[in-house]
Length: 226
Image (cartoon, rainbow, N blue to C red; front, side, top):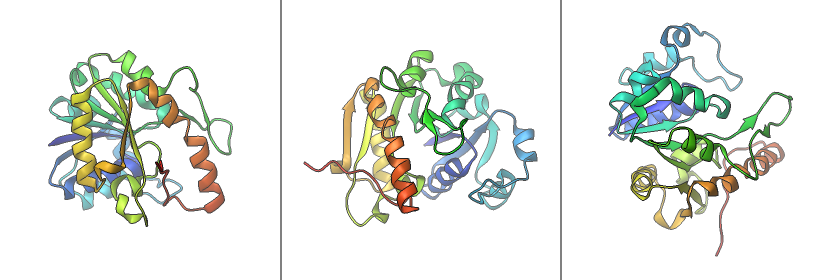
């Protein structure tokens, strides 16, 4: 597939690396290519700058959001939650009819310390994006774990659960096939229903953050035992 990953940070780079290894054609989307390439500072996790990443991953192209999405069969949204709507607005009509795997969460980092949610209970970021861009087909998934588990669920010692929310069955099928290629078993996938169910999965983030704080280890996931 031709896949565009919106976001150039650690999660975007991890997805791009995995997707290239799976023989997909991959582009990274950004608002301003020159400005992104000019950034020479690593983040607090030591993520390579995008220039460094592209130098060792020549099969990945960095393009403006609009151009990156134009020929993509699938868009994977891994921006910060606060920037998700802006990224899609920059993409414009190129996302019409596109399947969008939405991994974003409505995390608010403004107060320092652990982030809080800027949307919860009566709506979700997934719903806001679907309502704002009604011609795209959003699927919320993989937003309840860190990227290592997203892309390699077999790193864990036992099966766990990956949730899916969205209004379009055909879009979910695209995402399900992608999840299988990452190593997820069908028995681990739990389709919660339409996009309103993303209120639940996004609300798991405060729990996830406190587990991460207590263990100082992101290599864990939630599991629905039944």
